Length: 357
Ligand code: SF4
Figure 1 (cartoon, rainbow, N blue to C red):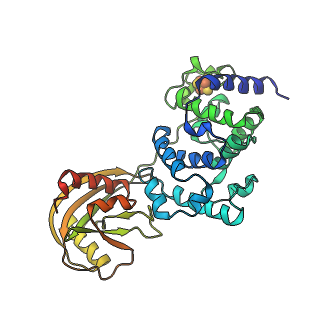
Figure 2: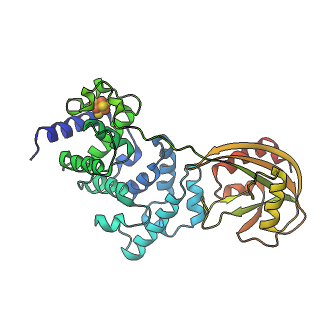
Figure 3: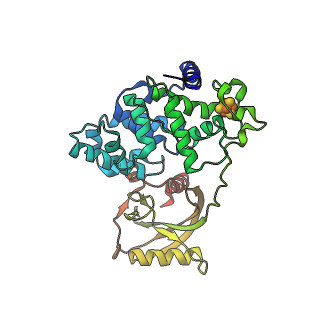
């Protein structure tokens, strides 16, 4: 049975959601596989960015089985630009496990699903509440902010996280748990925003305790962001005839599985040119002739920022020692490999200059 808060919360939120929900392609399906891949793509990524990736993905890979038997390189290429590539690799691994251990059917047991690579509580709760109408609260940072305001919680401690989860489960309409979760996501995005809570148009203002306070936005206390470190990277486009060298990032590196122009970080006691020559000698055992600086790009990853400077180089030599996969490719073959975004920015500079071979 609902008490007053329960029914007010669910009814008001769902009433608002029914006329204000965002029109998103993954909300028009009951296919667990499609709901799942949308949730994976949405982690740490804006909805507008995800939509075209989602549409391309489900057009090309229509089932878990088709993903399981797909080539890693092709999946990463489709994911290229979306970032956080471990999501793609984990999804691939999880699909293979489902095909091998569950006959291609997503396990209907929450704990079994939650243990698949890359899943975790948030994704499992979102998929099970939206796709199977099971009462789980999908709580990301945005939903947590809304609920912290509703409950007037200042500090997001573990105890308060449990309180938010338990309250949501208790208040959730068991007929529409997925809609409640999605309504809260939309509310966080459009009304109860980080720096501006639009309380006067909020459907749940009557039970919100922060709304009665002078500054609702002061709940919860914002955690100060860490200073993001910066790295200087030097990179070479090393031509041998009409082809240039690319290497595959090693298995233990960030962005593993992606390809890149060779190079790396440089030490404070060396110039970019010295560093590039040293890196290429260490990795490929070739001597290069560095002709000119092509340009530089800046890019921000989740844990650090980089400034990446590109030099045009030539060599007549073959790669002798390298502990990574490598290829010599033509500019047109860039389309066959997944590259980090910063490399694509460098390719844009090269392209604007006709690659200048
Ligand atoms: S009433 Fe204001 S603070 Fe409370 S949930 Fe709505 S927008 Fe957020």
